Every structure is written in C-alpha cells, then in structure tokens.
Image 1 (cartoon, helix red, strand yellow):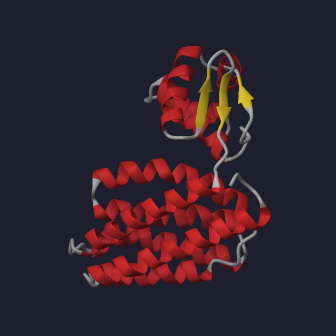
Image 2 (cartoon, one colour):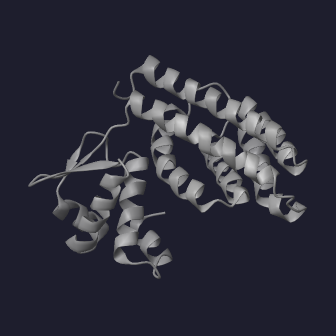
Length: 229
C-alpha cells in the first residue's frame, strides 16, 4: 500500500493518526533506516501533510521508543538494541501468557476462534512454499487474536506498543531463522487448550513459546550483528 492509498483508507482518522501510522510503517519496514536523521520538513513532504501533525506524531512515536527528537535536527530513528529486545520479550512473555490463561477461562464459543484458526491455516500454507512474509503476517494475526480473546484492554494497549519493536527485529531475521514449523505446532496446541478451558496448559504452552521465540531472535541478532548491543 502506497502513501496515498493509506491516506485514502484512513479518511475518518485525524492527520496526526495518519502520520503516526505512516511513519511507524516506514520505520518498521526499514524505509526509515535505524540511526538515520530526518528533518521535520522532510517528513512533512514525504507524507504530504503540514508540519503540525508530523510534529505531534513524532512526539508520540518518541514515547513509544521508535525515534528520538533532536532539537534543531529533526528526528533520529532509533535502532533496536539487544537489551531492548530482551526486555520486550520478557514483557510480552508475561502478558501474552496471562492473555492465554484469561482466554481459556472465558468458555468461548466456536465462532470466537474462527479468525485464529484461519491464521494457523494461513501459516501452514505459507510454510509449504517458504513464504516467510505471509507467514509473519499470519503469525502476527494469531497473536493479535489471542489478545482479543483475552479481552483485557490494558494488556492489549501495552502489547501493541511492543509489537512494533518486535516487527522491526523480525523483519531483519525472517530468512535467517529455521523454518518456524514448531511455532505453528505451538499455536495449534495453544488453541486446543483454550478451547478446552485448560488455563494452566494454555499459559504454559504460550509462555514457553514466547521464551523460545525470544531466545532465537536474540541469538540471530547477536550472531549476525544486525543491531546494537
């Protein structure tokens, strides 16, 4: 989706919201490279909007740890560090493990799991052709569905902030990791446990899944020296 399409699909949103989403996407997709500096006027021109919403967007994105506002020099796109990712995965592991537990306690009907099941099928199909980009999209959709099933707004808002940093790091490692067949298996087992109302098993499965995923990601980043220590 190009910038114009993104703006057209978000007409009901404010310019600041559009600026936040667009700048965030450019950072996550590494179009705005880690360590690079950008003037406010440059970003305004790139987004095709005035400086005010861009300025407001950068303030919010600075609070989310994606960039740093440098007085008289615009903004600096922050790299993701190894220590950042360790902390991010510690938080995600705890929160998503709790989300799995909460979801299993809710006695949800079959309709509630339709999108999560579609995400697993999408992941299986993507792995069959080693389409890692599609797999990553489906994997993120599954994790988002887990948070939705838990129905805890505080968990959702915190996880959403950290997901942006995970997405950036994963984009760097997507084809450096082994085929994520174990991840797909974990998701199936997790969904089965939630459907069965087995909260302890659901929490255990997903906590162990996140611990392994975080360790693998950090190991690859360290081995290939892709981001800061």
